[in-house]
Amino acid sequence: MFLKISVIAFFLFIGAIGKSAQIGFHTWLPDAMEGPTPVSALLHAATMVTAGVFLIIRCSIIFEYCEFILFLLIIFGGTTALFAGIIAIFSYDIKKIIAYSTCSQLGYMFFSCGLSNYSLAFFHLWNHAFFKALLFLSAGSVIHAFFDEQDIRKFGRLRDVLPFTYFCFIVGSLSIIGFPFLTGFYSKELILEFSYSRYIVTSNFIYILGLLSAMCTVIYSVRLIFFCFFVFTWTKKFSHYLLFF
Image 1 (cartoon, rainbow, N blue to C red):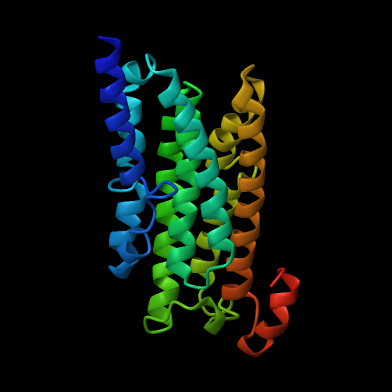
Image 2: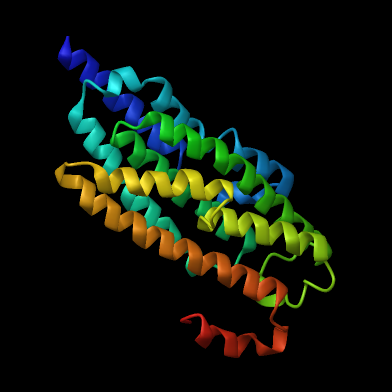
């Protein structure tokens, strides 16, 4: 009986990490960004990419019988959170930056499930849907203003031209960073606190990965706002040095 449950949990795990673009199964994510931005907002905020996490949450009773699968959830979630955050830092496509940001946030949800805190993972999933939809729709406004251009190196000084989009982008970015009193703060910080408070071997390791991922989130969010809304195009060759490039 235990063997059957382990096999079921393993295949559910494979399906979840493939659906939610975890490390090793993330290669389809850039291709999914070719569609219209409102479609990307819907897919990344509430439907396709988040289905893997929702599957694990709904099948939590099965995963609780398989400690090894929970360990794999922790490892895959933590490494994906950091890996996707690093990719977002070095990307120049505005939609791909936000897409890999989604991948990174899903890593938080995965290792929260691996720590058996499914309610907190669902809380972050719920909050993530709102600020990620806001970021994608704001990015769509910027892309439309530049006639379907997505390279952030060709943007600049948009806060004077698109003030409402600038405001929405600031709110969404602060939320995903985890700024106090915004939605991301209440779920993301709780996940990190819970990982630090668990007395298991992988807990401190995953806490460090979570902190490094949070640092990556700050870097690519500030970089995106800086390139799109503050810097003139001709000064961007100097701005690379300011942002470690």
